[in-house]
Length: 197
Image 1: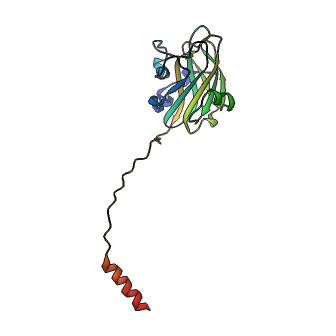
Image 2: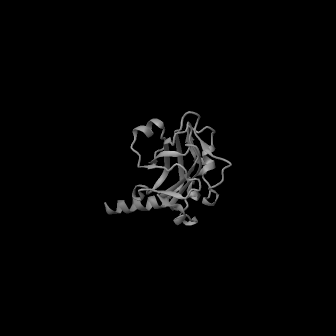
Image 3: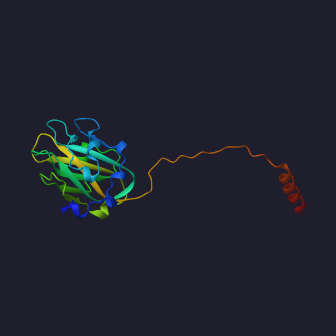
């Protein structure tokens, strides 16, 4: 763990590279609530909206797609009070459809043991940077919290390096026109071949 204040700045915040329309979470108590936890670092202390797991089940999977491949250096997370903050967080990279069964069976790229109580978001959890290159989709599995019946997250920030190589569907327009056959050329070629025989 390192202090986020050493690194936070607009130059390495990956917020602008997140495909916010594609954000999703499994086991969230309110559909679409996961979109509320991604915001600029300066607004990390806001508490009006949050992501929460269903009652009596602290596990969550958060799917974070990017508009272009990124390199992730670290993450910062502000969890809820009274044991609701995530404790065991596991990262998976470029899995199109990761569910809870997959998250239990597949080896994560990295696991973090999160602190209970970082209300100001000053702790930054570094990645094993060489393993977080060319990331198109990051899935975070919250396997457990600090003892509460549900998990709550107020803020999730990612730091790293973005690329401008947009991941978009290729759109191409082909113009089809019939090509007139030039009989003069055909006749000339035929005549040349006859002369060689």
